[in-house]
Figure: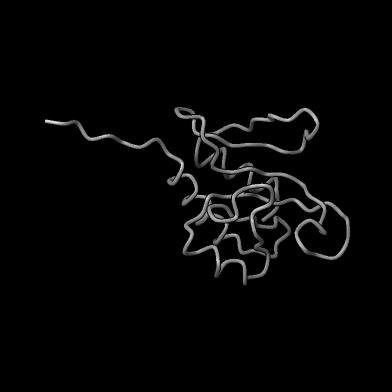
Length: 125
């Protein structure tokens, strides 16, 4: 999945718009829940060598909140890396160059969306 495809998928599926919170990094965009403003996806371009790959070319990636149990196995799959600039215990980075499967990225995106959604509180009584 390419960056523009993921952006379009997020906007269509989750009715979210991109937020660009960093003036120095105009290619880093955050997708948030409208109600609680929590991030569920961070799309950015990072040098490949920051992910443990060869080269300094920029690679489009997405950070997604992920179940800790899945993170270890995902890191062994093509296109997945320890979270770049986020908690490596709770987030995973996926490359947006076709090396990570589209279906897996969509599944993880949905998990991230659910994990960061506002919590529904039960009424006492």
